[in-house]
Image (cartoon, one colour):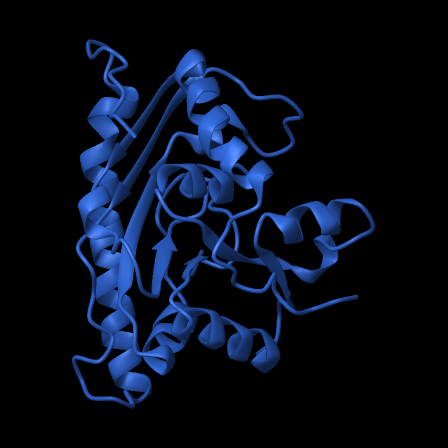
Length: 230
């Protein structure tokens, strides 16, 4: 299995751009798609997008909410023939779960230093009750080693549109919010474990706040399904 990510290029695969164009329109037809905080994502340069995790729909939902492309970690078990090729061309690359994957971390740092975005889900697995669970230190570690900020990202509604076990999309509103960047070098160029924990808690708290702000729009009975312009 080829474990290297798709190399950064000056252009983006057309099918990735097609998904960025088409999926928001599909989500709007299913109930609504709202994006808040575009201004918090840098127009160029590396950054980690750290998001809560609800559904298999989360990676594409974050990807189409961004105006730039983003790379992703994906569990190595997904890189089977055909499907593995497809997700690789959508900028996913394999990571071994259950142990520290130093190879994947090195690849992530290279991408970030090359000016790419990397989306991570620090909860590690999908939340079954919709709450934001404790984040691991992976996002803070990768971002600090690369010298780039972390952009907190909150998702609401993806677990309604694509619940666990579902084979088709269902009706529902999906909200994606990007918070203000968190400086990963605020404690110095080589933050220790306690510093990484402080950074991670800052990001986690920001995601919880963003998610709380999304809830009235996503589940409010009297609000129209207004959609933020992409």
